[in-house]
Length: 122
Image (cartoon, rainbow, N blue to C red):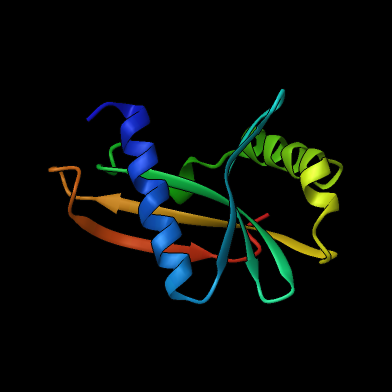
């Protein structure tokens, strides 16, 4: 499975996990010139921007550890761009946060080893 397919699979798993917690997935893979937000969800009245990190090995650290300061800055800019976008203006909620969902798969790249959800990650 190539890297992009692995990422999409992780996003599907993360979306299913969050929906199981009662989240409503509003937008998947929202893109602008700055990049992409993996998932935009509603957790009750709160808009939640979700960064999904998927790994099959810990050679380079856990999925959570892969979010460095550069990625945090980029996520912050992406959130601001979304909040100014026409998609956002149609939503009634004003509260928001950024969460991370870390997905670890076994070496077969299909079997889930672990899913961790970190609220207010930034």
